[in-house]
Image: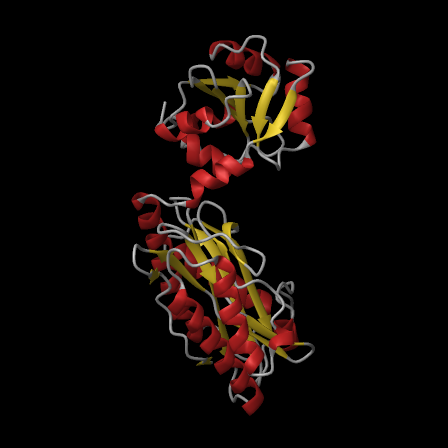
Length: 362
């Protein structure tokens, strides 16, 4: 049993069993990657002696070869998961246990699936313990993120030759995804190409709108390679000429983003970074247009702890990885966002995003 799993069990001694069902946590604790869709899939850990088991659909059994689980119980569609889950619980010494620690986001379907096998099963949250353990990245995790960010940076370097007037946002996103695949990116989780007025809506749906001379284009991409660790960048491009207003907003966001990277270090509260970044944009007169937090943690999930936000008074520590991504969005006109990925070191931080911060004209 790995140290990670044993520690997880130790910190939840009031329950009999830990049940993990989300892909990031199955990857982190069991080294298992397999999207089972609507089929039951879970990792079980006994609190008593830290024995573990994976219950997976038979069609995903091949993905368990390199897992750290003590045992694997596979089930077929015709059999159903019930017997395998019951045998797994028995196999780790939990033949009658009914108390489970699970993630906050476990679905009702999965809870009811357990209750069909173990009537009266009770569930309590383990998410705070998980967040605590995953918050500080190990050296191999940081190295994996460096590889992912390096690949994404190479993709961004190719964007100026891909974005052009007359191309639709959807067409541009398609070309970007293909390019990233060629660079070794295994999955593009998010690829937003938001042009003109669409760029003023941070989570605008990539559409059939054609890129037009005079547009600002916000391109936000999050992706993973085979390691499963995310890279998440945003850059803002300009089609042709740039107005004085567009350049003023851009330079303001650029200055704010640089300020955030400059002050990010261990023992500073997350909310201090948000405050300092926000103050730059407020002083320039665009404060009302910065409508989201300054950043979010990054790792096996594209959004995780720590959140660089005004309400987060927690002090940051070496080994934490997160984004710094201020923006300003003028309704109906245009938006600007610049996003980097940083990892805190013992004395400061390392910016993993090796992409220019200057406005790029296409």
